[in-house]
Image (cartoon, rainbow, N blue to C red; front, side, top):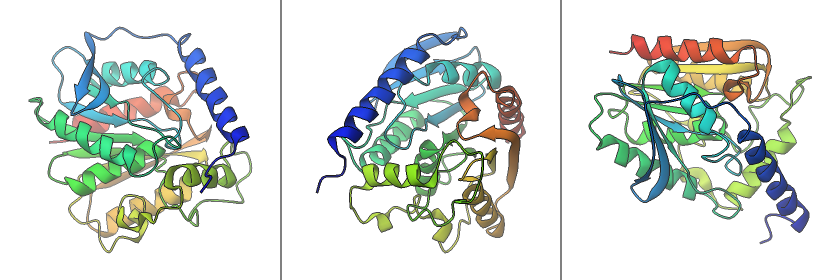
Length: 273
């Protein structure tokens, strides 16, 4: 089965290279300690501010095919400094070179490693496709994490919950379908509850959750429905929709909603017991 044409692979390589080149020009705030680590066999980067209040397992977005330690380094630094929590960012394997469930397996291994590092409290954090991986972690280990931050979750491979009529979005439903094709490559992922979290019988037992969404994002209805399912299960959940911004705003330092969103994450973390 050919999951990607030569043209698609070339375009993907170009997007990756461009994103990494742009990231090298991004300002990097200093963090007390930054080190590359082997997180249970998964390359990862650990950012530790002075006297960390706990640790975040941060799983970056990119449709399971984009994003890396290079592209998200600046953001991971800002996340650690703004929240006062250590941040572990795994460099999980990407599609199409490594289809499902490779990224999920890597997220689990990194989570296991982080749980053994002596931090008092752990929180799972993910944006877009990384949110699907973070949801997988909290579904597997609901008692490990005292909270979770899920930002425009990229779940529901059917794309049925996405807003196909939205005007002004920079991410289209068709692009989402391509990312799912590259990641699943024809596999039956029905056994992965995170990808089908909207259809789970109950989400009871999940940790307190902050859901952050963008107004101009086809995934916003999906995120709202995820939050509703959590609330139905009695999980404390807060939903925030940031006005006038598109998918990806969360990590973009040039977005006027970037700092307010990070501030809200810091406030949420401070509220956790």
